Length: 214
Image 1 (tube, rainbow, N blue to C red):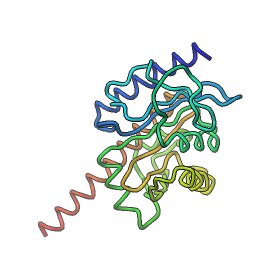
Image 2 (image 1 turned 30 degrees about the horizontal axis):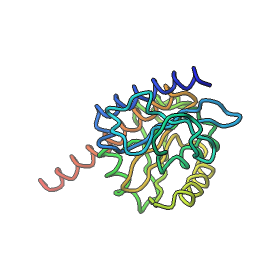
Image 3 (image 1 turned 135 degrees about the horizontal axis):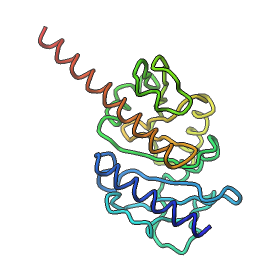
Image 4 (image 1 turned 120 degrees about the vertical axis):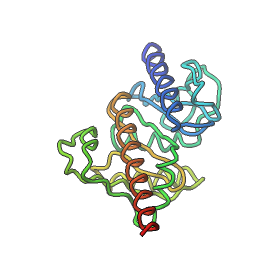
């Protein structure tokens, strides 16, 4: 477990710095995880309250399926560890990433009354696992945020079961979750979805300005 943990820790720290540089993990926002082993479940998880732009591999925690620390590393597990664990179990994910970009936060609120965001017709959709054409229509569910993490984890589980084809979901006024079989896949999914959400947001802004000019 030790070698795998160290390798995944280095990978998660590198992804955290990359996402921070893009404005997706500012301050202490967001969290990242990757599965170290399945039986018993062990997950490398970013700790709470850490600036992701300065995250180092030695700060990563190893947690079990109950979000309890099982490594020698100190720190406090993220409150959202239960969400990561639920996604890993429901999707069989190898990594789960959670970002707080400006655009995903805005659109999670803007489309909340519709229960989700439909993204269709963009070439970048082909970067999502299993998508072969730009004609694909991706449904990104939106879940109301809550500080009750066990209850929120249950809602996440039900949402994932009801939306088997979804590659991610949004927490309202909070941020984006996505995952993948590997850390590289999860990173790609976040990059694709962040691009698409920003494209939709900027397009909506341009259209609104055009209406004002008319």
